[in-house]
Structure formats: C-alpha cells, structure tokens
Length: 348
Image (cartoon, rainbow, N blue to C red; front, side, top):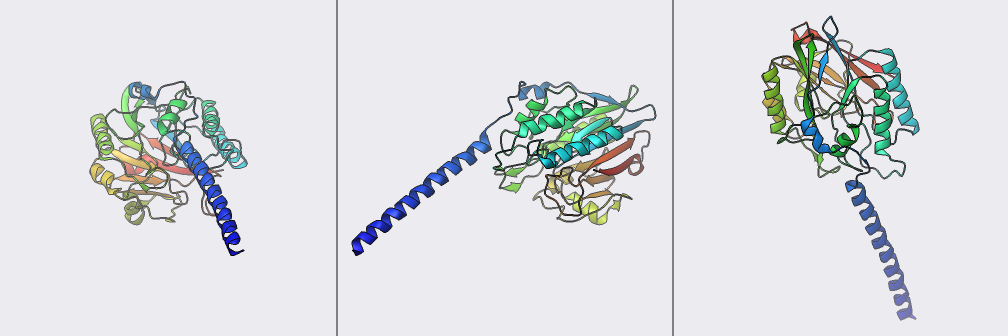
C-alpha cells in the first residue's frame, strides 16, 4: 500500500514537472521571439539613413523658430482608450499652435510587454499620419523602450522613412541608430542648428543597466557644432548627469513646473557626455524626456537643461502629472543664450 502511494506521488510529481517544463519552455520561447522579431514590413532599407540628404529649415522673417516636442507617449497600439486620448491631445495642440519642427523624443511606443493587443507599427503609423496632416518636418529620437520588442530602432526608422516629412540621418562609425544635424537659416544666413542623438537604452535589453551616450557620439556632436559656429539645440531621450546639477544649482525658467521625483543623475557614467561637451559654447539647449514624473527647465553652465514629463496617457506617472507636450521658441536674432529661448508646456 505504501509502495503504491509512493508510485502515485512520483507520477503526479512527474506530470506537474512536465507541465512546468513545457510551460516554461513555451513562455521562454515566446519571450525570445518577442525580443527578436520584426513586424515592421518596412519598404525602405535602414542603410539609406547614412546617405540621407541634409535638411535645412527656415525661420520666419523675424528670426523666430518654434519646435514642438512630444516624449514618452508609450502607445500600445494607437487605438486603445489611452492612446486615443493621447492622439487627440496631440491633435488639439497641432490644431491650435504653429510650429516649424516636431521632435518625437523617445519612448513613443511601449517597451517589452506581453499584451496581445500590442501593435507597435500601427501605433507609429497613426502618430506619423497625424503629424503628416500638418505638413510639419519632424523626427524621432530613439528611446530606451522603443526597440525592446517587435523590431529594433533601425526597424522603426526604416518604417518611418516612408513618411514625406520625416527627417533622419546617421554618421557611420559612431554608436547609435540616429544622429544628424538640421540647420536653420534666416534667408541665406545660418542662424541656429538642431542635433538629434540616440541616447541608448538598457544593456542587456530591457533588464540591464542604462547605458550612457558614447564618447564618440559626444565628440561628434561637439565637432559638428564647432564647425557650424551657431547656437545648437540638442534632443535625445535619456538625460545626462548634469541635469541633477542644473536642477539643484541652475536658474529655473520662470513658469515651468519643476519636479524632482526621481534622481536626475541615475545613469551610471552619464557624466562622460557632460565632461566632453563642457565648455562648448555652441551647445545652448539639451532637451530630454524619459523620467515620466520629473519635469524641469534650468539655465546652468551656459546652457539650458530641459526635461519634459510624459506626453501619453498610457505612460506610468504620478497622479499630479497631466500629459503634455513642450513648445520651445527660439529667437535666433538674440545671441544671449539665456534669453533667446522661451518654453511652454501645453497640457491636454
């Protein structure tokens, strides 16, 4: 009798173990698939990014140039309730303001998740189609979540190349999937420049530590800015460590809410970028997102450090944060870095 009970126990244990192994294998296989598949069906090759023509933009006759920045929308598919609210909010802003350039500043889509309704490229298409309705030149600065599943940042960029007003580029031999300058002219005079940089992500993907902007990226930025010899506004997704110093010691921009919910200097080795650009008199603005419930705009060490809270209803955030986008107005006739910019957050 005792032997029969033992046999029964081992049979039950073997069945349970087999179920666990099958489930773990299936789940693990699915996770690996989600990390590595590409569903973009992009018609363009990412390699085209290296030969992209330089795009030049124009101020108005008074030398004013306006940039609209959205970041951390974390869209799931573009059609769920939160995504619809986000797109409606962005549309309401585009209906009521004028801007000359739009920066989708990272984490536009949700990162690693197992939702069966996740459709990254549908979400990207709905956002891109909305922006295209307004004939605005626009770009995408890769975030740490955008590439985690269903395709890389290169896949996203190749997908977005199909849209007429999308601006892109990269420099061979340096880290990251998106690096370019677009120059701003007043008539035939170069008066300002915009730089976009890929600020990296976690390593290993989705679960590791945040990686800082690479030395070769920072040096490339300085070299290009020095060559142009005009003030340069820089956009990337994840902040560098100088944002904490700017928050603590800088001059806060009046009327811009300041929140220090999370440490601004959370990225290990984030100081490397700061050290390389330190003393560069042309880099006049660094604008980021990433931290969801942090928010700041401070003038520090000769430039503005500006970080925007979330632009999307699907993004995790503290209750006091209302999704918004950031309007940055540049008076290119003003050579005083502290007074040439004005900043406004528009809630929706």
